[in-house]
Length: 265
Image (cartoon, rainbow, N blue to C red; front, top):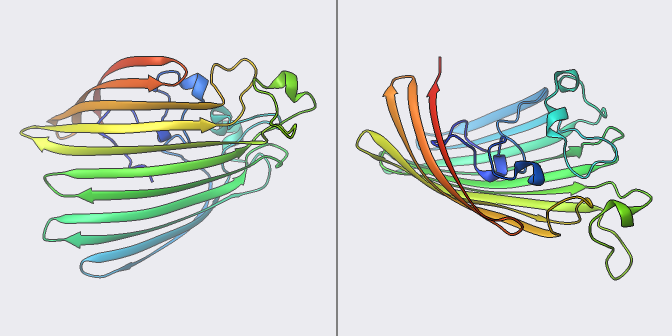
């Protein structure tokens, strides 16, 4: 349930859209956002004066990959020739529920849960499932967001896994046939004069085998600490500045600085 916009110029790591350091080694996050797809959705809501409950059920084309992949192919998933037609004729099914409650006169709390599952390979033999929980507190003085996601992804083993993969089989002689990737973010926003300040802690973890040429380990992690500032220069013009400190289990420490000028119409 990643919100449409953040104060920084990049997304939290679980929803990375291609700006994280070592993005190719990690193959981005869990599900790049916003995830736009073709399908059908049914939604509903029940509301009172100070609370609400909402739900959504959907069937979409879903992420895509080749028959011999070990993760989603995000380029193929957004390629126009494959965007409008499901690659395996097996729709990805998903659902979301959320509730909100007003606290006092100006504050609101939201709690939500989301899930989606389906097949991503062309032959519909490789499956995946994603689940997530999110919590938001909003007031004019402070915004708090927290979210956790977990994805389980089947991988293609092949006839020669001892040459295909970096790590050997377990004690029973069996190679991993799936990997798990989970991630989270905690962030807070607060207005100070004419600017908004942001602090975020986010991370990704991956457990499972990797291809022989990968730089990742069987257990890999990255944690990031971000400080940012945003200022509206005009009703539809925003400047963003942020600094990010990465701590990788496989690549050591990294520092990134981001600046952006955003206009919309």
